[in-house]
Picture 1: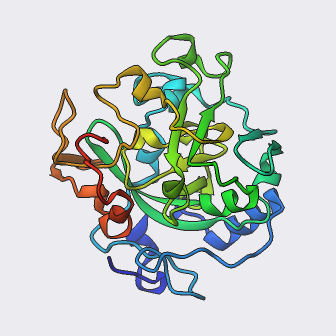
Picture 2: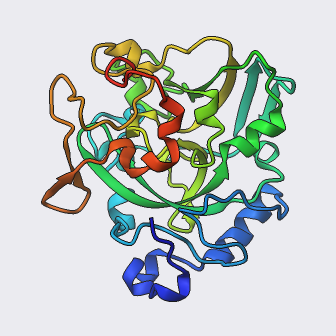
Length: 311
């Protein structure tokens, strides 16, 4: 993967200027909002710019998906099953104040105000491919905090082998929860080494802006080598567990959705092929890459596993 510095990328090549405000101004405002202080940034050399460079790195052949598409075509069943429902139904969703409960096999269980949970970590900008479950994908410039930075501060015990994430349950605000599409609230999970990988992000923004409601505000999980349904949104509980959690899609359709959800084009979904994908905003389909193109960084996590069985 190539690293490109901001000085090498005209703003017009990335996105219209009106949809991408100055990154430094946004980060400054974000840090003021969450009370964070500057700390050393966690970096993955193949994806992030070199130390001391304020630019961003991303694969040269991955054109960013326009902001308008990212925020108008979403999977967020809590607000409806149509891709257009979240943008329409989440506009009045209240995301402040926000509390996240931390429990289970952890040394610092508590109900954390969002600001306290994020402090003292500094949001950083990363550009990831994010795939959804029905063959479409996007390349999104996320702003967030490496999940492992938060986990290290919470101090899970040696018994913690998995991390479970639970979305808010509030049918008054989330009309999709009034239908039994899934067993609400939505639950997602990662193995501990997946959660601690430097690619795994707790996102609080995208395109240099605060995270929109329809994209999972105020905080969501981003795991770029997995299918999009692994990205728990509007998280209100983080539980450290000894045993693998029963995640929502594995509960609803166990023959179709496994716990791991790694992008694997060699294993078809029972109802469609996963060999090719459509980039959001593009007409032609492209070949799906193993682990969504992040195999060099994450394949070692699954050494010895049968990825057809552990799907």
